[in-house]
Image 1 (cartoon, rainbow, N blue to C red):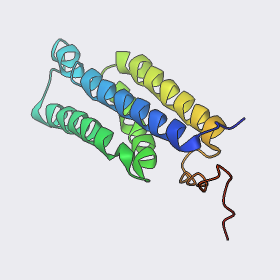
Image 2: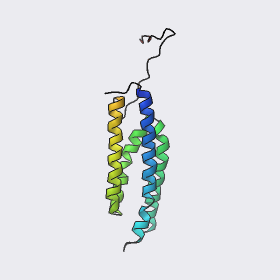
Image 3: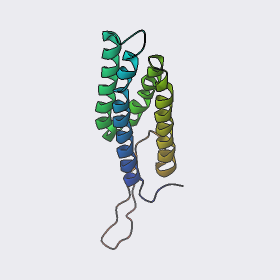
Length: 135
């Protein structure tokens, strides 16, 4: 089942993807607090990696308007999930976000016709209201 207006559906789903990426970036900012209370503590390298990941996730939300935005967001799900190596709770939090991301990709496939592909422009109509044939 595809949407009657796939262009509009794709735009809405890009907005949802951008929102999920911002939420992921904010969730990563909570990880240093959990790590600081462990025996190992929070070192400069860990803090730098987490802050960089958070910044990249938030900035990648702005790239969702581009054609490669979904591919970039999908690639960033891997380092998000790997934050579980630093704090075990992030396996669950990151896993939840990965499931949400996969659900968005599935909804996009159903409404638009592809998970990552470009959306075809709708056919324009002439003054009589009939669709003009495209060549």
